[in-house]
Image (cartoon, rainbow, N blue to C red):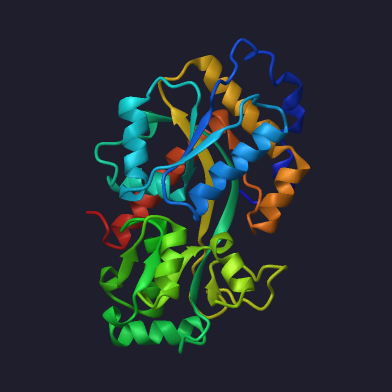
Length: 326
């Protein structure tokens, strides 16, 4: 699906019906679980959603945000499916990494329908960053070092082995001519915040993540972004080269969204779907996404179900191609 600003407002026409069919359900003590430590993309999803749903009056009670790290989101996924499958007041941050882990079997025995995927509302491009004083001036310098000695460059990521943070540099390495990309030295952290700490502390030489997670550190001068996996340079950051222009034909977009327990009531599922659509249609919410370099990318209802199914199929195929799964 094409990422366009127009798509962000495509749901406005639906809003006349919001709050009618699901009027009998009212959220009480709502909670959003971010399946990572503070500072990463999942944390951003929950805290931004909690703020706007309350500010817009969609929920009357403030939403509790709970960080539940571990297993690349697997701890939270198991918690929801095994302990809170019928909780009507729970939503959970999701992303490309969620569908990737289901595809690769990292969430043991999990399938898409174990949870109810509610929506995507944005997507952002992956990026590779180094410390400001790094000897690697661009992505080509780093790839040359990796080709000489794959273990010489540790790349931090805020999610588990086999996740999208791991897949992105593997794809670049494959484009660079690395025959066995599983030799890439990937260092897994629980969340983007911890991965950034790993980079800045010198525990790793580089960081693979989403552009929005890096913005504050880029603007403070702590890091340099040596390649972004976008089809063209970002309008607001024209000095950052794309991987593609450096000779690595890789584009990596990470969707942002939410899921909830599969066993929740139909009324609750409709309520939360409508609530997210109301949030997405708000100009202030869109400005927050834009400030974080997140492009509008909306899927709801059947479109969301089909999108996740397609995402899982794509990751399965890609993972087999690069040797992550058999």
